[in-house]
Image 1 (cartoon, rainbow, N blue to C red):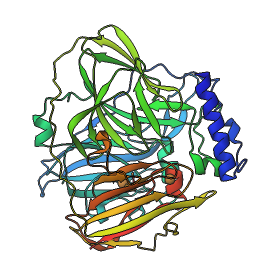
Image 2: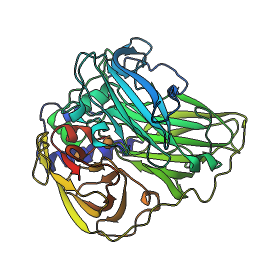
Image 3: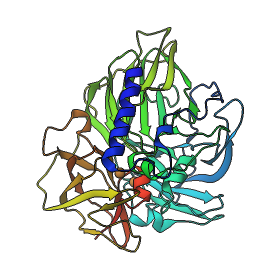
Image 4: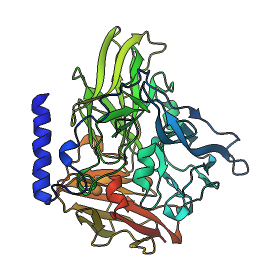
Length: 478
Ligand code: C2O
Ligand code: CU
Ligand code: CU
């Protein structure tokens, strides 16, 4: 443990030297101190976000209605004091929206904050005008509705603000929630699907709190550059909560909901588990692993088998920072048995691209560009023909980590650093891909179904401090 801490500090120092930004607006040597040490986290069972199934039939005449209120709130992270937050309906984060493929929906967001906001459906395949980017911001007191027909495979997506230059702060204060899409294929699979019992949503985040238990969003230039990483790790709005598990297969739908922290997840007893889904679909077959790396906004569904583990305890840990996300007690008898299938779905194979594009991620202290251009809401950077298979190569030309997210549809990874041997658990439908310092990836992407010559979608780094400071571009589908 001490050796790990030492390595972390020395690599921070190395990055500081390499990027030439020692002090900046804050003292980076304070970053790993626990500023909230005088406060004690409230002892909680793992909170399960409320499930919203919508009202209405889901026909085109009667879309299912999901009403959400974005508001200021007070949340009980600590015993001693409440924390001022932003939230969706409750006091931190928001409910889980259950959607079915083919249904018509209307997600109605009401802004009860005192500032403008936008709300984006991350991973959703939808018309650009319904995407919820900075082109669809709405004012205090207003309601904005994302109305469309669900048109994609079963997966775990999420919603979060996409306010121009404010996304990072809005997410940090607590606005985000999961979207679970089911379809006839997921219905037929023998998977854990009792929500909150053996099908467990996990929104993983980290935060900085001040000595009064208040959320601090005040990144220095150094932290904007290398990541605004908190000392307090949170799962579903609680600090190190406890999950009482049934002794059976448990499915976790894991979202890296951090602003800029890459998580390396695993269980404290080193047990293996199986990844069954990437961002936008099931994998074709489960992939066995002991550690799972997720960069911000990536999702993974995993199944871990606790069948033989009644009365034992373990932890879901984060190994890049040596933190515990969830304490797990296998304390309940199985209420039903599931047996993970060997085949989960079939995915569209790679094809022969008819066009290529390249994107270079660059920046210097506190400001970032893609292909030399910082995000400009008035500029359409790329025009992409609908139904055309393209290969996009994204190169991280910096010595800090990035990732890359494309709106509107999923993509497939074809190369990492020129190597076509894609890791089995990345060989699926993705909308966000991790690109460590100095590396590059090539993806195949095809825009389908929706065209709009004027309203753009976006592509960007999903390290939110990078996105807010320029590392984003816009494209239309025509
Ligand atoms: Cu999750 Cu453009 O966003
Ligand atoms: Cu998105
Ligand atoms: Cu980045």
